[in-house]
Length: 105
Image 1 (spheres, rainbow, N blue to C red):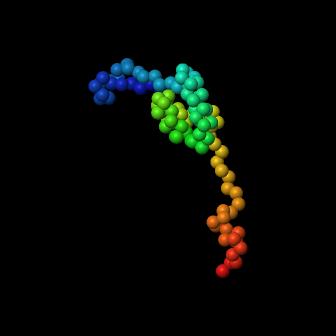
Image 2 (cartoon, helix red, strand yellow):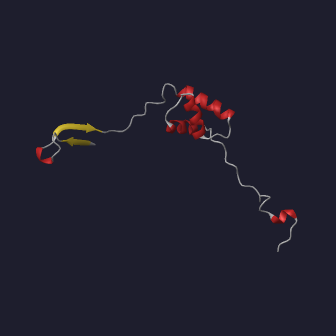
């Protein structure tokens, strides 16, 4: 897409040939320190199994390894570090009044 920009900003002056080309974004691949960041994220995830990406991001930020939370979340997903959510089982003891031998009213 190209945009024509006028010198004074009014459409009556006619467009000055200052065109801006906006093309597709080029993916240049992982950054130079992505490998170190990935390795440290794996270490922290092994040590703190229940930490999610926001908590890992806070730890990495304290170590000054990362600034952008979106980058942390992307690597977290790519490395498969997300823990499995607990699946609901049977009735809990507090809600199951029949489990204690009580009769219905």
